[in-house]
Image 1 (cartoon, one colour):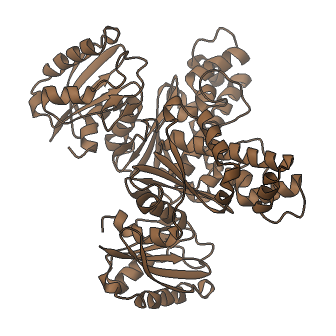
Image 2: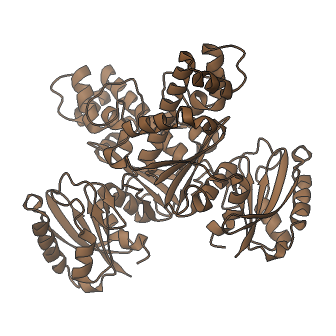
Image 3: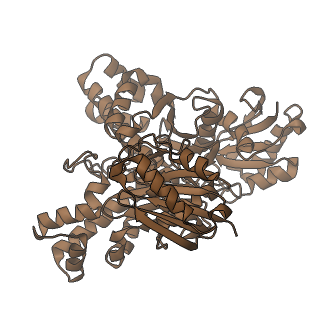
Length: 299
Length: 299
């Protein structure tokens, strides 16, 4: 079976793995990413990590997941908040020159979505919409085993979808953007406003809901409704075979997931009731999905 | 150059044309569709129309556009309000058996979007979102020259996207669905409520706006804002290179189009400001797009 090198390049750490075509991690190297020391240092370190992978020469390609939107045609980042200096830095070209292997770059949410579509919960489905429901809310569209990144690498930036224009302005996102209303961060803010100013995590809100606290139950219910409204907008746009949802908030799925799916069904056409919802399956979607990038390009 | 047979099968008429790969109509046959007499009669008539096309045997494939969602894998309609008896009727298989040519079926909005993506305003763009702004509001996603129809043929049913949940319930669509707030039909309803109970067309509302009527100007402005909100949701989902917009309402584009694009830019990330908006170019997108279906399948 073919193998690939998958790289999860973050602002703190970088991880490099040799991964089989069916998503098994064979071996892995981890290192600080040295993001604050600039692209040259980050890349020199990354290259040395790849050299440590056993028999890297046998691999059929390299894929890199990065935090931020990517120009996937050129393999360069368009925005790079956590990797200073990387805007328009030729990541793909640098690695391709060094190792002589076809190299592709995409953002971490797209890469995770690709992993779930090819070897995870969405395996075999022609159109998948992957969603991360975590500190923020993001996503990825995968059609026929290929990520659709869009013109500016912003396909999947669904956290900015407006689910109710009559909310408050909090940050650079739209008023009523779903990320400001239903993310883990939003749950903390709303929990502090409505439950207790000392709330420190979304998990505390869920714990209160589980204990029967009426206000916490209402917060969770409204989150489920708002999240469903975002899914409804996505569904009418692309009609996916399946939504695959990952991220920390889904750990509390017993408290809201079925309700959210019910709200969703009330917000889409009769003919769309068969759209499935699944929880993400993979432990390492970022690393595995990066390794899947060459596969999605036919390598 | 290769040629294809394009068919626009409606509830009233059916049109059949021989079309070149670059979208030129060579000859055309038109007939009543006999929809109320049932599928056998409709298909017998359609087959005789195709036989009237000069040298149909030289064509490389057949494409059919129909009014309603389609199971594109099987070439069958899923809903068929205007073609009674056609739900799950084997349109593609019947024509393929009769003519020995590869045959594909898709709904009329998807087919029009495909035409604009391949030989119209969106030519050469990797990801197009086509929108019809007319009596209703619909659309189509075209990625790398192929329509993404989705699980239930409902990709592009964007008329049901909720742009403001605090509106009234009018019909089977969602409360605040864009089709109920910004379509030609919606403009008539709002015009009757706010301008004059005798308003009979969206054109009358636009005429009043052009004459400087403050209420009409406000109606058109709110329509532009609501339409932009829908485009914003679509853009964060797929980040198209270009929106291509057709339909009767765009005839009054001088009164709202630039304003709508401005609202859109205020509702998307900085990195998405380069998404383009174009007016649909083709006179016969339904007929030409149907003929493009075999091309999009590599025929």
